[in-house]
Image 1 (cartoon, rainbow, N blue to C red):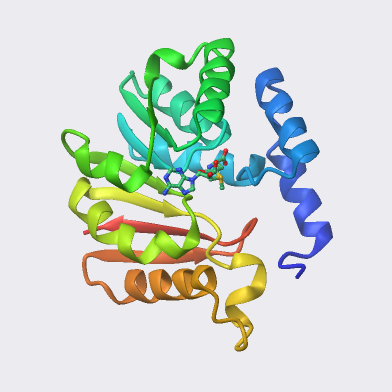
Image 2 (cartoon, rainbow, N blue to C red):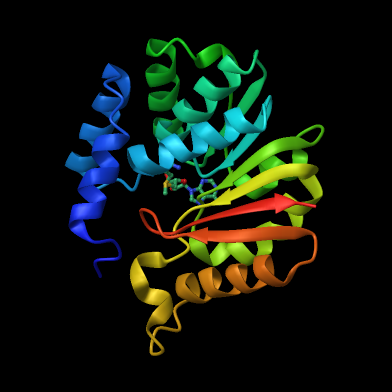
Length: 211
Ligand SMILES: C[S@@+](CC[C@H](N)C(=O)[O-])C[C@H]1O[C@@H](n2cnc3c(N)ncnc32)[C@H](O)[C@@H]1O
């Protein structure tokens, strides 16, 4: 399903052009492998939000080979330093992320965890300024309780794929993933501890302030 008009999509991608060689390499890999990175438009939004709130402690759930991690790590470095937690349950992806981020000069900011992301967040010490959620969608609803506990008041939660390529609108789709996206959306928009907005960019991005 085409969620965004192709002309708008092309325009947004042009505006988000970064020219960074390591990011460009990661984008080419994602394209070649069909790997679902957030892409430059969402990457830039993540970077900008992290800059806007002066984030020093960021936790990412489901980090793949580190594309979104790059944007958060760049923001945290420019905010004066801190830590970005990269989580993925695949050892090889974690290794690749280390390599990309080292070559981008950002690995000193990143803490790498190989394993289940929500469990890693539960075990992490302290609270976070920003949490980014991009794990398997069936896990979205259950992850929110842990996220809420670990996100400081005034912090921001960003959740990817909240339009789920339009599958949320298909009333015949009752798959665990689609139901997970619907239920997480319902929770975030009814929970008085969050002010949530769904941005129709890429595959739908929820940005929620923890209040
Ligand atoms: C959508 S991709 C992440 C893309 C990344 N955010 C980016 O834009 O570069 C999700 C990745 O996290 C992994 N993953 C999904 N759910 C996970 C979980 N609960 N714990 C750890 N890794 C998970 C997937 O196998 C995949 O490698």
